Length: 242
Image (cartoon, rainbow, N blue to C red; front, side, top):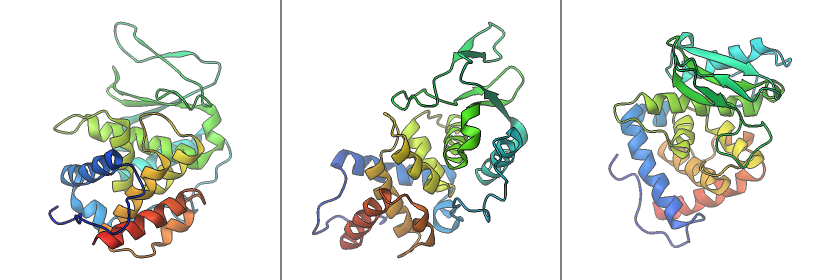
């Protein structure tokens, strides 16, 4: 993707240089891996009934329906995924390993731990790609979308020609498939070490919009009020740098 990024801008970049460099390296890597077409022309999904025509009543069926929409969008066969719902009293579940290996679950509210909440553990004994989802998330559809998208992004990265299991790269992958609004908003509600941070999301989404030649994209209305200013500052910086 030659010529995507300019060299100079009169204003200071709103995120640290190391974050900027990492994001601008991740973009061409993911574009090459999944196809530049995804960035340029893919639909950006928003937290609206038009994109998720599901009645969220706290039951498991809406979670499965949500998973189907996300998996299809991210080009994963929904039939290859098993969604395992667990309660906050559950401390460990089997990974399906013939050696009896178990996966120890974190708490939904434990936002400091990278491994807290649901997690993707790869293909198991049954041949399925398992995602464990805490029951409490069934009543929080936007954050449920964000985490399911993140975990399916990990699936895509882990099964790529050059396997990667990096939470920040998985966050960026959700954006490439049009789910970045959800994951950006989740970063404000529950920031976690090792994931893309709020200000970084503002920059990444501004870069995403610039590559798509979007000046005032409709989807930015669905960003949380705290992330929108980060997006606006980053957009101004990138416009100066063109």
